Length: 71
Image 1: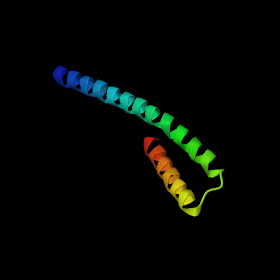
Image 2 (image 1 turned 180 degrees about the vertical axis):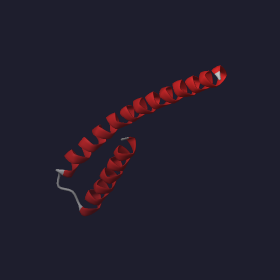
Image 3 (image 1 turned 45 degrees about the horizontal axis):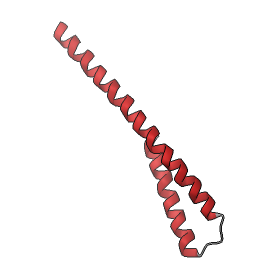
Image 4 (image 1 turned 180 degrees about the horizontal axis):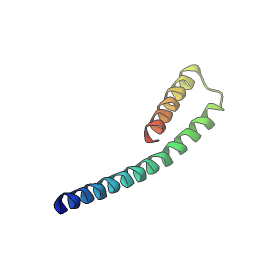
């Protein structure tokens, strides 16, 4: 019984560490995503041809997609 409790405690500690690391990774990924999103917004304010504008929309959609995954 004691061994099982120790194993459960170890498992819980590993899970907690993994969750903490995942949270830190998500935070680090979101920082450059915010920069990219801001740059897309600034670029889209310029007069652009349709192809460039469409490309920015695609990139912006993917940035938001990554942001949703990290949440």
